[in-house]
Length: 544
Image 1: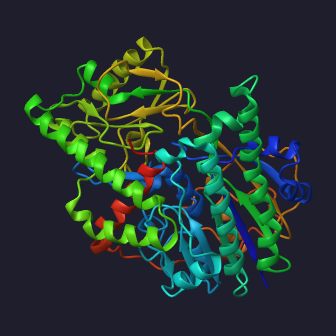
Image 2: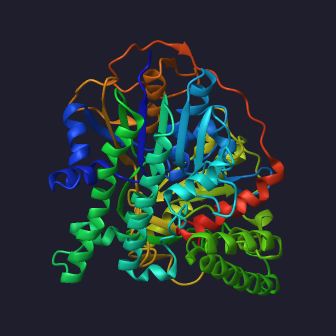
C-alpha cells in the first residue's frame, strides 16, 4: 500500500534564501527535513513566472508544450490576451492522474486553479479569483472552510495596493493570511486519509515582491533601526510558515513523505524598460492617429477609477469584502476593462512590425504584425530585424537584453506563444507596455511596492519513506516534480511528461500507467473568470 505524500509549495523561495534562513536558525523544521532527506536547486520555466511554472510543476509539461508563457495567453488569430485557469490544468495534472487511479486527493490554495473541480477529493482555489465566487469543490466546502479558518478568510493579499505603502500594515495582513491558511489546511488534511495532499503558500511570493529591499541585506549596508526591525519581522514570516510544516505532517498522518518545492526564486528589481516605447522609437510599432488616442486616454482614466473600486473592495475584510466584490462582479460588464484593452485601442497592429499587447511585467512578449506569416522566410527576417533594432535601442539606454524565439523553437508551434520573449538583467528588469514617454529605461524598482523580481532558480526539499538522504544534488527542474509525485503514488508519468524523477527518490521507478479524464472547458463562465484573474494580477502588481 502506498504511503501518503504531502506536497507543500513555497511560492518564489530560492535556494539562496532558504540557505540564509537555515543559517540564521529561522526555519528549524525545514532544516530537520533536509538533514533526514535532501535539498537542491529547482530551475523554473522560461519565463520564471508563477502561472507557467506552477503549471509545469503540476503537469511536468514545459512552456513550449502547453503554450502558456504567462498568466495571460494570446487568443489567436487576434492579439488580445486571456487569463489562464483550471482549463490549463484539468485532465493532465498530478491530482487528475491520481484521481483516475482511484486515489484520494486534497488540493489547497493552488495558484490560478480556478474554477475548482472534482478530482476525487477536495479542491480549494488559490489566488486569481474573487472571494465572492465559488472557489471550492464541492461547493458546500466553502462555507465550512470559512467557518473553520475564520470569517475574514481571503484568497490573497494584494501587496501592490496603495495602502501597503505602510510596510507594517502589509506584514500584519500577511501574518494573518498565513495563520488563516494554516488553520484551513490543517482542517482539510484532518478530514480524512489522503493519498496526495497539495498545499501552496503564495504569501512568500507577495512578501518578496513587496519587501525584497528589506529582506536582502545587500540592499542596505547600514539599515536604519526601523528597517532592521521590519527586516526581522519580514524574515519571521518564513518562521511562521516553517512552524506549519509539522502541523500539516501531523494532520496528514503517520508514514507520510514530504516534498517541498517552489516555482522560482527572487532577486532585486533592477529597473524598468519601456518595451513598446522602444519599438516605436525604432520604427517598429505604430500608434493610431492622435484623434483616436484622445478617446483612449479617457478610456484609461475610467479604467483607473474602476481599478480603485476594486482596491476598495479588496480592502474590506471578510464577509463585507465578499459582498462588495460580489456587487462589483455583477456590475463588471458596465465597467471599463484593463490596460490590455487600452493598448488595443492605441497600437495599430496592422501597421506595426512588432508589439507587446499587454503581457505581465516580468518580461516582454512580442508578436510580429499580422501581415507576416509565421514560419515564412519573411518571418525569420522580421525576427532578426526586430531583435537587432530592439537590442540596439536598449543598449543605448544602458540595458542588455536577452531575446528568445519561443514560437519558432517550440516543436509543436502553439499559436498562443509569443514570437519573441525579452528579458533583461537576469530577469531583474521589468517591462512596461503602456508607457511611451520619457526615458526608455528607468533604474530602480518598478514601484516602492515592487522591489523584488523573479529569478530562475527555486528550491526543493524531500524527506520521508519515498526519499533517501542525498547531498550535493545537481539542479533539477520544476518539470521533475510531477513524475516524482506520481512515482511516490506508484504511478508512471504520461509519455509526454518531460520531467524526470528526482535522483533522491527511493522507491520503484516503474508503476501503473497514469491516466486522467479529458476536460471540456466552460466557455460560458470564461469571461467573468478572466476578469477575476486580471483584477488579482493588477492588485499584485503584475499588470500596469
